[in-house]
Amino acid sequence: MASQPAMKQYRNPTPTVDVILERDSNVLMVRRKNDPFKDHLSLPGGFVNEGETIEDAMKREAMEETSLEVHPIDILGVYSDPKRDPRKHIVTTVFVGIIVGGTIRAGDDAATTEWIKLANIERQQIAFDHTQILRDYQHWKASGGTFWSTKRRND
Image (cartoon, rainbow, N blue to C red):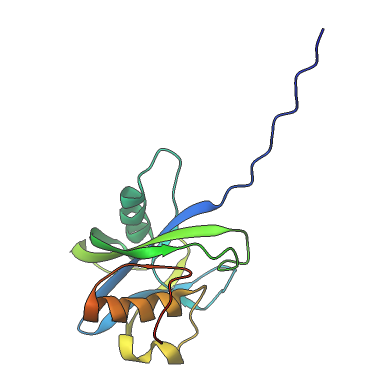
């Protein structure tokens, strides 16, 4: 009897989503309850479940972390730097969304929710590459376009 060839093991990046929600020049952030980056601010977001679209994942994660119903209006970009998350290679699609319902209340792995002045993001302790994402968002508001990890920027 011939032996079966060994199955190749793939180590693929893991997909996540994040969402930017703005009101009166403030961006809604969550304070992380867990490591990595415990007690740092981050955009609402998380892992995409198997069988779920990224749009549905973004809506679900926003609801779980902020108790808000949100809808996407655009994609800011895709961030795939293998070092953006210390756990493993994580690729995130960042949405720009609008709040369509609910009352803000932290949940899931968010300790609190906080509105942060977009102009003050550089002075905050922000997790992952979310400072760069928010800089890109400021450029997006001024001129549109999409962003990705290695795009040349005029910062």
